[in-house]
Length: 117
Image 1 (cartoon, rainbow, N blue to C red):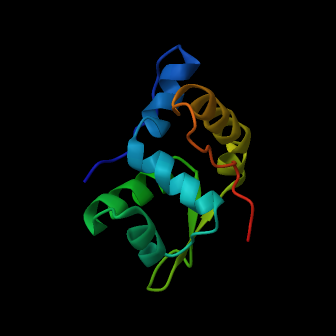
Image 2 (tube, rainbow, N blue to C red):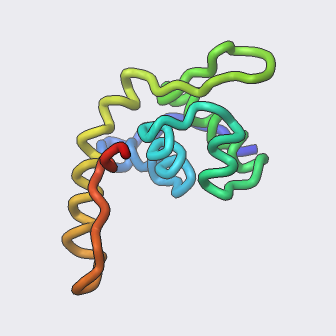
């Protein structure tokens, strides 16, 4: 299983990449921002295998991005911490950059965050 070790790099981008540089971490955070809290919700929404999800959730807990409630036992919820909520502007910027540069002419770009409804 992967484990999280904070970066000691002098560059702040390198330090952020240590935890946020994993595709699954970015997508788990995205779905948590969109309301997912339970293990099975993440599996279903992301199509991630259980071992990979377990590993990434552990890394995210060690990095202080999510907390497990309750800490032990079944039916836990995975909740964003204040540190994770501070990433909301980054997600908005990333979505805006993607909309401006990664969609072809005539393609619809979804809003971020998506409008409820």
